[in-house]
Image (cartoon, rainbow, N blue to C red; front, side, top):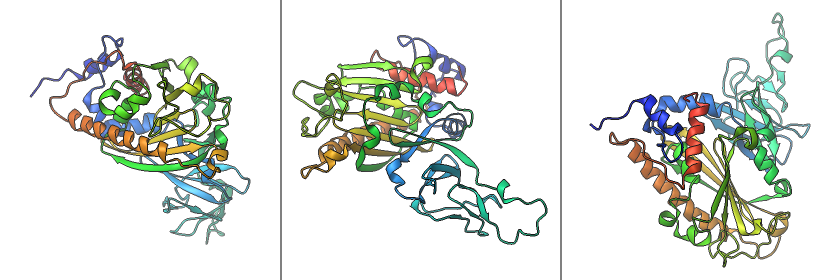
Length: 384
């Protein structure tokens, strides 16, 4: 068996400057115990995108969202607020809802019929009238923090976490002049990927692989025309995002099947940004890809240490969608191809890092944001 450097030595290798550093130890990409620790230290303490305001059109519209071992209910209340609660009955702990989406008038536990309002208040508890010192007001559903930005709904289990807009600081500033809250979903695809969630995030964070894996993408945005300016380790000024932009080739307008588009740029797009595609990783698991004429979102949902589910959604301006010739397939088709190309190499990487022969490799000069992401993982995990 190939001798593997000690754990502390491997972790120190990530923390070195880019020109000296080595990538994450293999156990961070395959170990169930580390995945459980990530749930506690990352996914239960971070702002996570769980949907779009348009997913809750009516009072009582709801969806369930699973994060690690937790299930939460996200629903629109009678006050028109979108709230989130643990999907746990206050009686004896039963999961309350099983359907993933739908319409509610109240939230009723299937076990003993304890019933809650859309605001989470306990309004019905059969055969409790004779209980001593039992006050329904003390048995509301446990809330989960829920905030919105740009039409997206985020949740956070951590009551001490900074507000959402502080978490998104640089992204909020970048998109201040864009009417992102008015965009509407024009396509949605889900993928099951046999890879650790961090492998998928690392892949999104670099275009070193683009000439080999994505000839279609590389023709539209040549891999050397990228500029990264947001880094996770620069917390004071950036917020929890990393990334930057890539320049469109001279004969192209957007990332579409032909490289051309009839769709106008999103209102408020600057002249410079009409020639760029912005790629931001919103830590921990949201990819925010802003094109001149549409917004593409990926949400990476960890299933376990070696499997993830990825949700891709395409958003367009409603005025553009209302036109008789509107067709989002030119954007959806090319990104479905790019996605599948990415998932394949991510799965190959997952297979490789399970090998007894794997030891962390070196970063190249084109992987500064991968290095940044890996350093941040160790930082929030308390390993450096």
